[in-house]
Length: 90
Image (cartoon, rainbow, N blue to C red; front, top):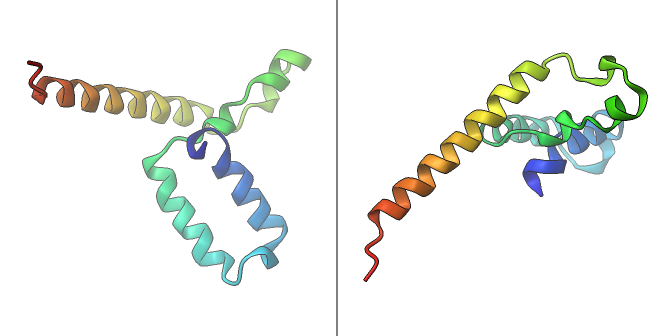
Protein backbone atom coordinates (compact mmCIF):
# COMPACT_ATOMS: atom_id res chain seq x y z
CA UNK A 1 0.00 0.00 0.00
CA UNK A 2 2.84 2.40 0.75
CA UNK A 3 4.31 1.88 -2.69
CA UNK A 4 1.10 2.05 -4.66
CA UNK A 5 -0.77 4.97 -3.19
CA UNK A 6 0.73 6.97 -0.39
CA UNK A 7 3.49 9.28 -1.61
CA UNK A 8 1.77 11.57 -4.05
CA UNK A 9 -1.44 11.60 -1.99
CA UNK A 10 0.24 12.43 1.31
CA UNK A 11 2.54 15.06 -0.18
CA UNK A 12 -0.44 16.68 -1.90
CA UNK A 13 -2.33 16.67 1.40
CA UNK A 14 0.59 18.32 3.20
CA UNK A 15 0.88 20.93 0.45
CA UNK A 16 -2.79 21.90 0.58
CA UNK A 17 -3.55 21.33 4.28
CA UNK A 18 -0.45 21.85 6.38
CA UNK A 19 -2.49 21.89 9.61
CA UNK A 20 -2.93 18.09 9.48
CA UNK A 21 0.36 17.52 11.32
CA UNK A 22 2.25 19.75 13.76
CA UNK A 23 5.46 20.03 11.72
CA UNK A 24 4.65 19.42 8.02
CA UNK A 25 8.16 20.26 6.77
CA UNK A 26 9.87 17.52 8.79
CA UNK A 27 7.11 15.10 7.82
CA UNK A 28 7.55 16.01 4.14
CA UNK A 29 11.33 15.59 4.35
CA UNK A 30 10.87 12.14 5.90
CA UNK A 31 8.58 11.16 3.05
CA UNK A 32 11.11 12.47 0.54
CA UNK A 33 13.77 10.27 2.11
CA UNK A 34 11.42 7.30 1.94
CA UNK A 35 10.74 8.21 -1.70
CA UNK A 36 14.32 7.29 -2.55
CA UNK A 37 13.77 3.77 -1.19
CA UNK A 38 10.29 3.03 -2.55
CA UNK A 39 8.91 3.95 -5.98
CA UNK A 40 5.72 5.99 -6.25
CA UNK A 41 3.42 3.85 -8.37
CA UNK A 42 0.52 6.21 -7.79
CA UNK A 43 2.26 8.82 -9.95
CA UNK A 44 2.35 6.34 -12.84
CA UNK A 45 -1.43 6.00 -12.92
CA UNK A 46 -2.43 5.87 -16.60
CA UNK A 47 -6.21 5.72 -16.24
CA UNK A 48 -6.66 9.33 -17.35
CA UNK A 49 -4.53 8.70 -20.43
CA UNK A 50 -6.66 5.68 -21.31
CA UNK A 51 -9.88 7.67 -20.79
CA UNK A 52 -8.97 10.90 -22.56
CA UNK A 53 -6.13 9.83 -24.86
CA UNK A 54 -3.87 12.73 -23.89
CA UNK A 55 -0.30 12.20 -22.76
CA UNK A 56 -0.29 15.50 -20.85
CA UNK A 57 -1.66 13.68 -17.79
CA UNK A 58 1.69 11.94 -17.24
CA UNK A 59 3.96 13.61 -14.67
CA UNK A 60 6.91 15.58 -16.03
CA UNK A 61 9.43 13.10 -14.64
CA UNK A 62 7.66 9.94 -15.83
CA UNK A 63 10.85 8.51 -17.33
CA UNK A 64 12.61 8.70 -13.99
CA UNK A 65 9.60 7.12 -12.27
CA UNK A 66 9.64 4.18 -14.69
CA UNK A 67 13.40 3.68 -14.27
CA UNK A 68 13.19 3.83 -10.47
CA UNK A 69 10.29 1.36 -10.44
CA UNK A 70 12.18 -1.07 -12.66
CA UNK A 71 15.29 -0.72 -10.47
CA UNK A 72 13.16 -1.46 -7.41
CA UNK A 73 11.70 -4.58 -9.04
CA UNK A 74 15.15 -5.80 -10.11
CA UNK A 75 16.48 -5.18 -6.60
CA UNK A 76 13.63 -7.12 -4.99
CA UNK A 77 14.08 -10.01 -7.41
CA UNK A 78 17.82 -10.08 -6.74
CA UNK A 79 17.19 -10.07 -3.00
CA UNK A 80 14.65 -12.89 -3.32
CA UNK A 81 17.04 -14.93 -5.48
CA UNK A 82 19.86 -14.41 -2.99
CA UNK A 83 17.60 -15.43 -0.07
CA UNK A 84 16.45 -18.58 -1.84
CA UNK A 85 20.01 -19.54 -2.77
CA UNK A 86 21.05 -19.27 0.88
CA UNK A 87 18.15 -21.39 2.10
CA UNK A 88 18.87 -25.09 2.49
CA UNK A 89 15.95 -27.19 1.38
CA UNK A 90 16.04 -30.62 3.01
